[in-house]
Each structure stands twice: as C-alpha cells, then as structure tokens.
Length: 221
Image 1 (tube, rainbow, N blue to C red):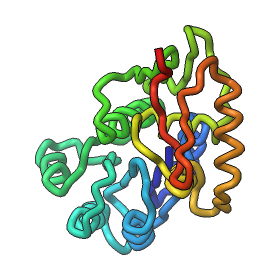
Image 2 (tube, rainbow, N blue to C red):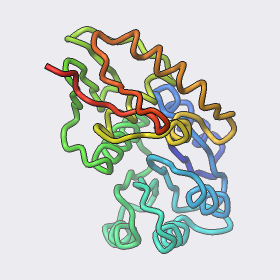
Image 3 (cartoon, rainbow, N blue to C red):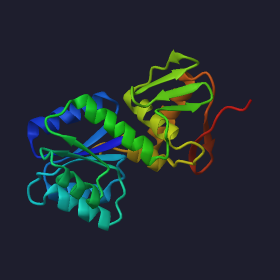
C-alpha cells in the first residue's frame, strides 16, 4: 500500500516516512501545497497524510482542490488546531479523519490502516481468505495460525489483493501500489514477487488471469 505524506517540517516528515515504511507502506513526500496538489491528483495513493499548515497552498485549499478534481483518496489531516469548528470545516472539505499535534506515530499508522480498510469496503480489521488471515491493525499475515514471513514488497502486494478480493488486478495497478514514485516499476518483478508469495502460503489463493493480471480468491473446497 502506498501513502503520500504532505508535511513541510523536515524532521516530522522524515519521522513519519520512517515509521510508515517500517509499517509496510511505500511512501512519497510533498514539502508544500503545490507538490501535494500535483502528486495527489497524479498518483493512485491508498491514503494521504495532509498537514493543514503547508506553504504556498494551505492544506485545506489543497483538500478542496483534490475533491473538486475527483480525487477520492482517504485523507488523514494533521493539525495543531483542536477546536471542533476547525475539524468540522475539514470534514466539510472532504477529510476522512484527524490527528491533532502532538501525536503518537503508532496512532497515525492505525488510523491510516483503518481508512484504507474502510475505503476498500472492508469492515473487519481481520481480512480472511481460506486459512489466510491479514491482521490489518497489526500489519501481519498468518496461514493456519502460523506467521507468514513476507518482505515489504511482498506484504504490500498481498495486502492490496486482500483488500480487493475477487477482483482482477493488473500488474500495472499492483506496481503503482507497491513502489514509491522514485522506483522503477517493472511488471516482470511483480510476477516474481507473486511467485514468492505463493511459495510461502499453504494454499494458492492468487489466480493468474491470462493477459489481465491477478485475482485473489478463496481455495476450492
């Protein structure tokens, strides 16, 4: 899964990036409102972290523009403003959740995971496919109760498939949600990663749809 962090304070931006990457996300960064607006409209993020106090264009204006341009990506707002009227204005602009500064990094991770899950139409924090379980709040996968050791890229691919079961997902789409914007996205690498995931699971829940991509389905029987 891929996150855009829009924060102008370098130390906080780097800290958020390290925490999110350590939690299994691919992360892009925007340092001001112009970058935030451009990246949010151009890239298919799974969620966005947006500071309201951005230079050039403030976060609230960026959010308004995103929604006007048809960007429906879940947005978690970071703000030093704790008044309800400020939060109400943010929700009316299209925000999905708020975190008030100062905050715990783990809270940001948990809220983002919940936003992504709800955006994909998943109500439970534990996603299931046959004997496979994805514990979204904890960022871990189990198979028949045993932990599955996935690399960060494997985890992002499998997490995206688990959030979108029974849908054909193209290699291009998977690449867009596995890599940040600075990485090369080669479709054959996706095939290799899928093969590695299959070898780590006791059942094959990832179907290859020839010429189209992959589909996650429960095992037969």
